[in-house]
Image (tube, rainbow, N blue to C red):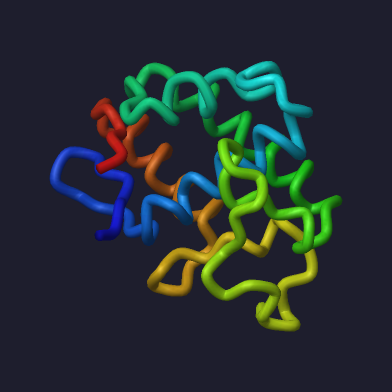
Length: 136
């Protein structure tokens, strides 16, 4: 079953729950050095639990830029599929497109869009419309 970011009735498709967990796992292990929420408290401590108030979206957008920078400096092989089971691997294994050159472009939604761009659009929509963003 797929998950999406929702702003009221508008959805932003992500993919499987395990795919989204991989994104958070990679940020936790690679960008926060296994200290959950230490660098990105809005994304990791608030959005991760499933809902982010629209008033926190500006902070989240700033964190997304920093996450993008961090992931851009890491090779695709550094992806973490599950922080709770570090031996877990993505269903596609190491078979990824040659166009993926860093973790910044590794996370592509099930409909072929860059996850960080999708999240940025959803956060902006949430902020502009003063509606909370929900993961479901």
